[in-house]
Length: 187
Image (tube, rainbow, N blue to C red; front, side):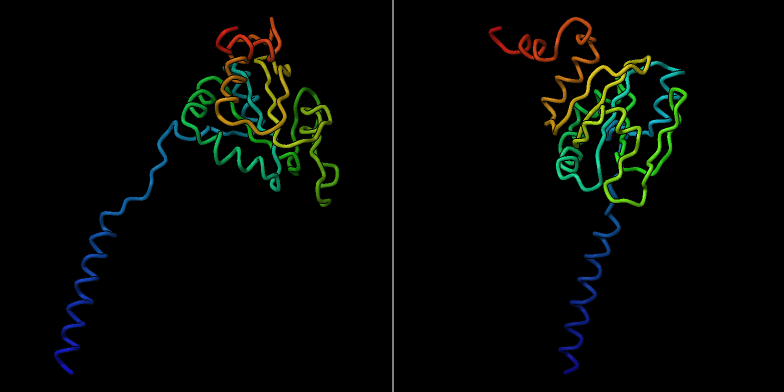
C-alpha cells in the first residue's frame, strides 16, 4: 500500500513540475499597436480631425446585429484593413441605440426614448438619413461633409475598395460603381 502511494506521489510531483514549467513559460498575448483598429468616440474623432484633418470612418451598428458581429470578427481583424483605417481615417464605432448625447454642428443629438428597445440615437438617424439598417458605414470628409453611406456587411476585399475610393477622393469625379469597373481587369 505504501509503495503504491509513493508511486502516485512521484507521478503527482512529476505532473505538477511539468505543468508549472508550462505555466512559467506561458505569456499572455500582447496586443501590438497596429493590430487593431484604433476605434474612438465620435466626439474624439471630431476633435482630432479639427486639430489634424483626416477623414472619418463611422461604423454604425447595434448590439443585436449578427452581420455587425461578423464584420467585427472578420473584416475589422484583417491586417490590411486595420492598417489602412488607422493610417487614413479616424475610426468610430457608433451604437445606433446608444444613450449617449452628442454635440455636433450646433446641434444636440440624443436618444429620445433610451428605455425603449430599438430606440435610435438621433446622431445615427441623421448620419443614415433615417435608413436604419445595420451594419452601415458612413464616411465624412475633413470638413465633416458626408461623402458616402455604405449599408451592409463587407468582407475585407470589398471594404478596401471603398476605403481607397474615399481616400483617393474618387467620389469627387465618379460614382463608386464606375470606380469598381475601372478596377476590374479588361475594362
